[in-house]
Image (cartoon, rainbow, N blue to C red; front, side, top):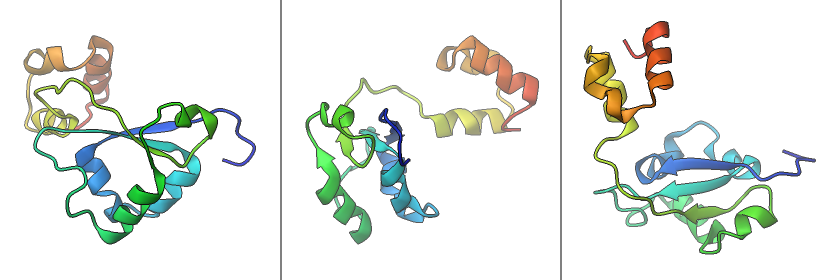
Length: 123
């Protein structure tokens, strides 16, 4: 990360963010990138956070998106988006169950779905 001039942002859903403490060396992410958290339906973003994650949340949270440009890493920013009716985890689970491409075609770009199929991923 040292000497890097451009910011990098790691975009994660609120459910993945809440699970950060279970990730190996998760606190090092903040030296490498900003963390942009996307709220997810049914996931409480800040209630009952693990203590270590609560500490990072309080120290790094910003409401100013400009902060993501001013530093190369280290900030937590919440970016609301229009909720989608399915998650990446659900898509992977459907593929693992043997869902036909037509069943999930509208949920992924055609090129991504073709790549998944050609490499037999998530089976």
